[in-house]
Image (cartoon, rainbow, N blue to C red):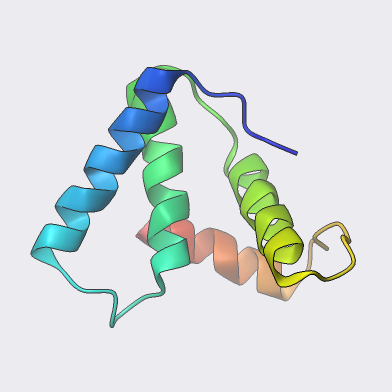
Length: 90
């Protein structure tokens, strides 16, 4: 599972992430939320827009693979809705 993005979109996301990290810390919100927000915003800036749902699903998939858990799809429940609103607020 991946978000097919152009190199320029990925680079823009990294710049946004580094600029945020330079001015703030990750104490208030988890780093993962800001990474999702930067990915989503970079895609919009570079006119390579992706749905927030796709970004959240890819991050969920990557987290499962890295932790060695069984890969299961993300359920659309209250936790998903809360995560989506956190990404939008970030």
